[in-house]
Image (cartoon, rainbow, N blue to C red; front, side, top):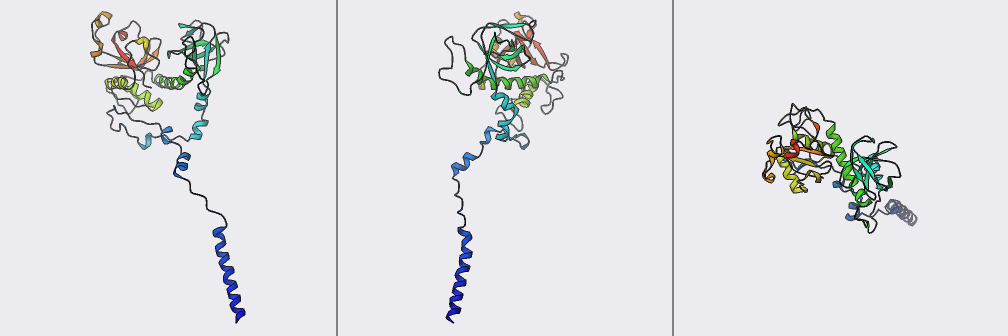
Length: 328
């Protein structure tokens, strides 16, 4: 009897140990704290391309529709060709006075002479002889790639101490590096706009397709398509948006490539037709995108052929100009 009790007790003990062993085989991992979890999740607003504008009177203004949200994986973003190109953006220092031209040719129009010590952002190497650059005023043109004229260096990722400006007051590589991202965005907007050259004009065009454009629809669409930036739907609201979000510039010479330009009503073809007019009181009736070098990308009538590029120097457009400013 005692043997049976001892044997039963022994079997019970062994069974209990077998049941308990898995519970102690491996310690449970410690729970992550809220801070640790948050640090492991990419910040959503860094990868969302947002659409919506408080000044827009669109039905969906200020809201993100499911179809309008683009979620970009941070690893993909870091490894993308566009990101790589941006990280490798180079700047150049003029080491000997060199001409900035409208085209990559010695016979092209000279925009101005770039002086020794100036810094430019190198947007592209057109060929072995020419760089496409943007100067510190935002003007885009072509410059000789000869090393005796320009010294090329990769833009620094951090600003060295005391590098905001050199002794001569010229902006340094830090300025150029900081503006390279904006320059790339502006070029994307302009490239998008140029592909619509010849698209017919229609006053009050449908904002939901690209079959036709009026002036404000065109400007609004190319910024939306290129960058996901949604401007108000008409030129007057766009002008008000620029004044509240940017700096209004009343002189064409102050404008930079990609700036919006706003114009008053046509009063005549002569400069004298606009003398004595208080332009700050005039109503905006037209908008376009400034390309630099006195040129504008816009659309204004069926007879003109729709979307086109015009030179505004010494024309009615110059007389009608009210103000301009940057979207970015």
